[in-house]
Image (tube, rainbow, N blue to C red; front, top):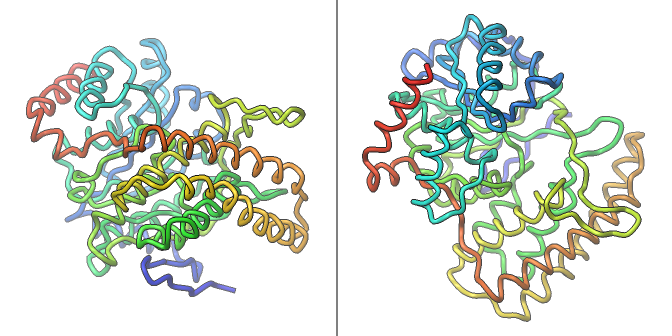
Length: 410
């Protein structure tokens, strides 16, 4: 049965009916005449050897309304860059596209300029790839809609792209930002960082620090860590972007602060997304975490991003007694949700993973305690790469430098 629920702070567009794909894409073709639509796909070089990308490119090659596709890539050398260009030329011959070599010598220099401006240590990753992909479109004067999604969606269907873009492109809706949501289920429930960490942590933060407008908004999001969004270019040029795994949750917080009321939405993409699944990043025998890998690394950076945005939201240094309570409040909420997830699995005939998920919650609780302790010593700050407009105000020649690099690599 379709879901009609509308959270007060977050317009939600549900998948209520099966629609005619050609009709929907035709509608976007009309809108794109005055509001062009481009797509940014951040990716590691290794993705061209994996099975998700060929299917995705086959679908994207049939999308009629895209003006350009940017593949913003890293973790490759000069030979890899040449191979990637040949690969995309073969699979997307009919669509205007470009491959950015983010850790190549020219773009690496520009990335370092951006990081210095933001006061951040430079690291290549998804956030910086997304930033440079957006910047490359803005610098060439793209004005309209920019969509962004991951490169590892195993069951990709081009219908998800029109759903993502339509709320921003449609003149009768005129949202400035659309965020995706969907299920992550196969033989078991996935979406572990979202289900086991983010949902209970947001509730714990509300319990400990009070239900601020930001936390109420985050509690209304269906899938806060989804990697797919579409945005109006004018709005996007004013938005900073986190360089690490705090990208998705940080972007939500910034959108809430900066977008006009009721001009952002979440969109049901209408499919059960199957991304590449990561290991949890801890030894199940000893419970020892590997903070540099797997979902533990993601979890730690998500916790820090949430705490930093809460600090920014409230403008205060938290009392120790509140930070000391946070891990216990999280654990209590997570245990309630674990019971519900077990019931969901039983109800739907899915694999039971309660023992593994209880252990993951224990590990996440320790991470929360560690980050909370760090916050007492050094209050967290929002670590964003700068908004495009802000950067150009202070480094006006950056746009010319980026144009020169792209012309040289064309």
